Amino acid sequence: MKHHFDPNNAWRKVATAIYRKPEDSKIFGTVELDVTDLEIFVRQKRLEGLKITLMHPLILLFARALKNEVPQLNCYVRRGRIIAREQVDVMVSVLQRDGEQLGSVMVPNADTLTLAGLADILAGDVQRTRKGAEKGATNQKSLLAALPWPFRGWLIRLLRLFVIDWGLYLPFPGFSADSFGSFVFSNVGSIGIDIAYPALMPVSNLAMVVTMGSVQTKPAVVEGQIVPRRLLVMSAALDHRVVDASHGGKLFRYLKKAIKDPEALL
Image 1 (cartoon, rainbow, N blue to C red):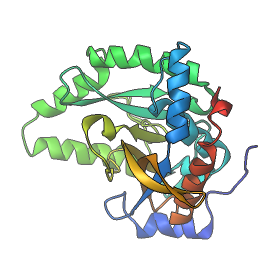
Image 2: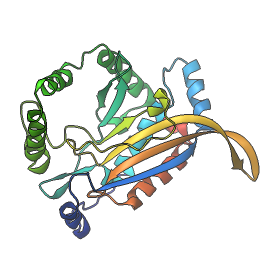
Image 3: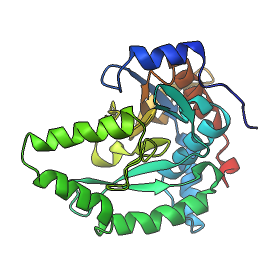
């Protein structure tokens, strides 16, 4: 069920003036999720031919949470006002072919997808990204890298002024105040990091960046008994101009509940 809300309440208007773009407006949070049963679900679906990892159901759960539970997280700041996005688009960070740099795959309307639909999108787009088919972003990076210092920094600051602060659209290089989607999802566990505290990229207008750490077997208390369980730490950085810590708490409470019913993702 869709929640109706006014993103521009009195505090939000004040917050956009108090805090600058997120150098000083970050909220960090982590939650430890018991993914024992979710891993079993993923393994079963892989045996049935569905090519997914633990990352796939988590992306869908975050996307559905933003649509139905915490729509405040699906907003951005434009000219001092909080703007609610009409859809949930997820930017998924992926390792490129050299294993040293990150590329990105945009998944539009992620909350409407099934696991099979998300798997199909990521399978094709990730391969193209890793083969260097992300030509637009690659060319932009190359152009910026070719500029000598300090002109490189000046150009970035101009882009931030026009696009982020003033909310303008620039046909070249194709930037707008909403170019980076609803949130970024990065699986840092795949590169050996257990817990990561993500950065809110200053040239984006993201209200949230999520990192997925590594899964570890740890002792946990289940029904009064200490048993080995598979635990995963998820971390998030939030833009305090747009949301408060209570919104992050609501998001993580939803995740803890939702992972107990992964069949709903089908």
